[in-house]
Image (tube, rainbow, N blue to C red; front, side, top):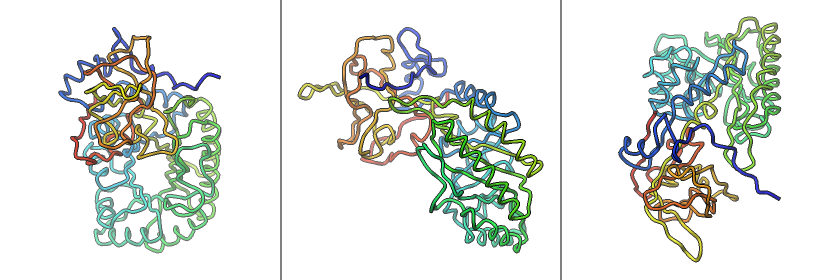
Length: 409
């Protein structure tokens, strides 16, 4: 039986055996950056992915970029020119979003632990606050009253279902995220008693799903829930964020998400929404799907060694820069991200090697017993699928090594 393989990484062209990122040979890009390791994000690929999503989904849907996937300011600035909304999850991300000049009313602020200072800043900026508890509603109202302003409020709903076949379930059951669906009518009453009319609902069931049927089921459930809650609360939402759930393939055997059935399902759901709610701004929120496959992490081989018959490529990057690719500090079953020797792409002959970083821990592994072209000191190891949840999700202070560079090309 053949072992499963990674989905082909064809988004980056290869010329003369060298990977091209942003239209530039990888080795030249490394010289331009001036050092390794580094992350590189290809702006053309990001634009192409956004265009592909718009083509696959109904045109009236608004597309929001979730900044937590990649908060690099240059990436967020680029996405601000492509997306219809920006979603933030901290005061720091709010700074990045506001610096783009994006319309504040289409910036939303989610997260279960917003501080009082963050709530005050959000009200002052005029962004939409996705409230996640009755306590947060009270704190938000206090800050709005102190500022003499009426806050823009969306109710984040913890649905009574979850996104099946997903890598991360954000709704259903007991969750720190959002207000339980059955408690939404009381939350609306609380807001109205404070003189605040909510703008709509944010229903985020989960993320990182490669199964169109699971995403379709979650979207259908979200639409039905929104209609049910609007009726129970006697109000017509002006905004409805359905999340997205779109995933990208990371590991052997995974296949890319087919967006066509997702678009067809949403096209069938929207008329029901219009009939029940009237004119409502319906949006999908995604981060990883827009930028994940447009990024690479690049490290240089600084040593090649053989230990009892096993070849190790020791690089200047690793776990401290790319925690997810290393296995998140020790998964029970570690899986390799797709990787390559970026300046030896045309070499067919392979050897089985492990790519490790410079840290003094056995967890510092970028690729374990993977078939790659023979590499030597100075060659460039590339980890694909690195445009989302890479640098900002990694323990860069671990063992005191330098941070990597980031470039948008």
